[in-house]
Every structure is written in C-alpha cells, then in structure tokens.
Image (cartoon, rainbow, N blue to C red; front, side, top):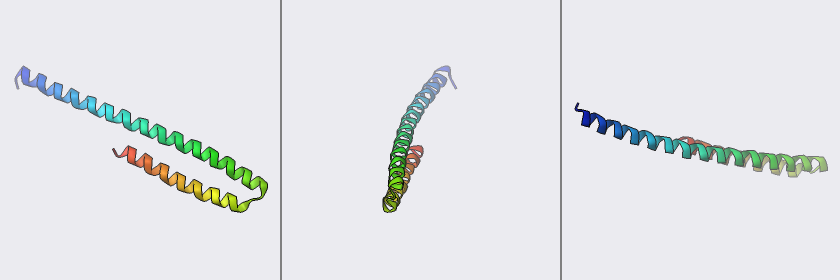
Length: 85
C-alpha cells in the first residue's frame, strides 16, 4: 500500500469514527432526555398517589398506579429505541 493509499484509508477511517461519535452523542442525549422525563413523571405520580392515599381515595391510587405503569413502559420503549439506533 502506497503512502497516499494509506493516508486515504486513514482519512476514511477518521470520517467514519467522527460519524460514530456524533451518533453516540445523539443517542446519549436522547437517553438523558428519556431518563429525565421518566424521573419527573415518576415523582409527579408518586406525589399524586401519596395525596390520594392520604385522603383515602383508593380508586385514585389505583388509577395513578396504572397510569404510572403505562408511563414506565412508554419511557422504557424510548430508552430501548434510542439505545438500538
């Protein structure tokens, strides 16, 4: 392999590595957003369930718990989708 060919190969490799780095940065950004959304939603639903429990509204606690479960599933799907890109 000539020096020019080696340089061209290294330039292609460098470009590919830069693309991979950018892809990883985008994925990490999406993962951070999904985790932050998940944490915020969980804190909100926990506070709502606590208030409902304190007031004795068991049906509201059940409803909030089911909604929280659905939120967890949605956010986990986002995280898996981001991780598989």
